[in-house]
Image (cartoon, rainbow over all chains, first blue to last red; front, top):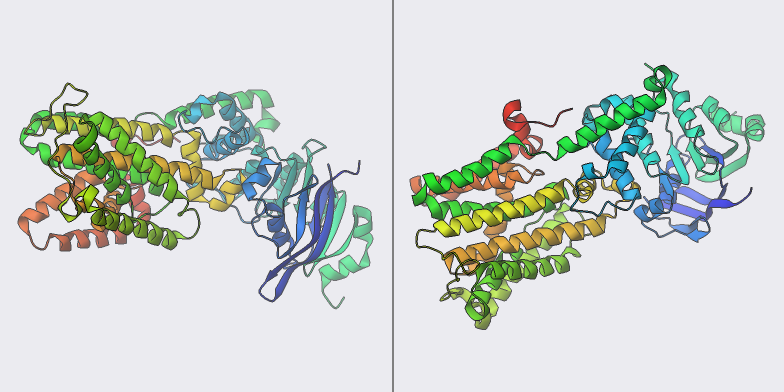
Length: 249
Length: 345
């Protein structure tokens, strides 16, 4: 199994003189559990933004399942099965979790443009939203306004919302950040339980989580891929330790 | 607390079933008719019987309300600010006048033709408001409004120029109900159109489309990431809003038998924005409440201080905005529970 679903070729992103992404060529195989690690400011989130169309690259290309999506709008990439979560929650404050997730499902099912039927009339959409919220432990708060939910619940909604689009490639930007310690593994468990053909690219700082979840790791330093390999290779690599412990180590 | 209490304690299927039942109930509650809605429509009918001498100002309120409700669809739902909404109102007014003068005096036909014409203008101009910030949109819409006003002024052979259009009278509504001198039929006609228009826009508000508009307003980046095609949705919403704004303009023409160049004046765009600020945005009825308050306050001020009433309107605006946008947009939620029948949690 070595089909490449997500690929970047010589991706570059500059912010003025600052090089946030420096010639990144990345290949992610179908079904991979690929982790992206690196010190703060290494350009991990920028890379995710380039992959999902939140930012346009300065140079280079992005391919999804062999198709060049470099200049494609975000919503079209989502329609093609590529979606993400955000490091800082990006939710609809005035929506309830139920409305939030139901809208994502309605858009996935292609009924979002219907302006005549009430959402309540889409029984399947509502049922699926309820089931998804229950799976993430959000059933009890599904009717509350999102903005008043505790941070941990908002974090779970952030991840549930990405699941609602049923991605084939899921990019998780520090999903466990802000989730209480004892619940982190459960969040990652839900991610691990995704079907084997769903590809996951994970940004995470918690090394325990990374090593237990990923089967392949890329280390990003100063915008460029520093080293890439299997979990065993990376965890044994003295250079990676040096990067994490400090420049002088 | 575990993340997944249901799954660990109860069997997953039964908790999912409970969640589904609850979700279906919550979704149905979203769109149920609120108490204040019933009050509004009963009051509109009651006014016909109780205030026979006030038909003209009540008609003015109904027309302004339809205009404001249509703006709420773009401002309160999609978050598109506009200073040129009267371009659609004015076009509708002129089209209805020309229809009555040259072609067909039946008002409902004129109303529909005016709505279609404004809808086409809305569709064409919607592409200009897709990009940019609030400020760009304010300037673009303002510019379109100003251009429309000048076009109407220049095309005197068609529009009557500065004199406006007059000398026509609309026929009986649907060939049956003749407009009377006291404006009673005109009032019922306007309330009827307002009711139908509000009900149509209400339906849109609770559809997946309506929810996606609020998502675009709430968080444009995330709405893209759940596959909402924002531009397409904005084009549709803007076009629908233009249709109803055009119909409001047509109502003004038909009830007054006159089209003044004033229908395209900048102050109308500003007034309708003010109406929404007063009534609150994002739930449609803000346009109706706002129109009632705005018209009554304006009427009252112009009696007690005929020359300086605009001063107080300005003062009111400043006070309202200082009180805060958040409170303004949903003041209905601050009504006692029984009155507002908030959505259950």
